[in-house]
Length: 120
Image (cartoon, rainbow, N blue to C red; front, side):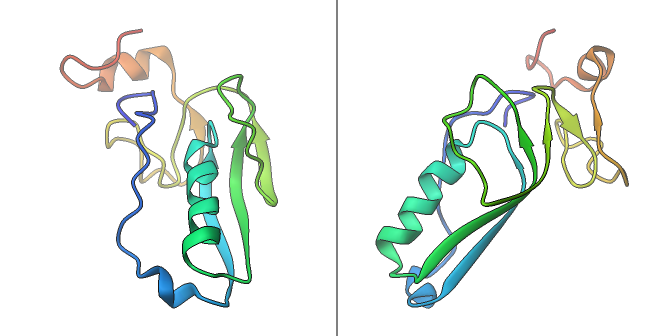
């Protein structure tokens, strides 16, 4: 993310895919926004790792017109197309440590916008 917008850049690094061969994999996400990350990651794991299966669980799934159509196999809550923070989800590194999830206000976005970043 850059501010409240996804960069659209999906990079897969840091795992030896051969360690997943023959295993049933459960990917756990905090939020599925547009679904772009999972729509790239799941097929990549299926094609390169030789896994038995891949399932996705997500605490939150956003209802948004920006969706690429990816749906988690297991979803805690569907939420409206708003930018949320808290419970390890941040806005420009702020609000990550809140013990609850909430929608960041327009004032909050302005207050915590990075230099030359988001404009509301």
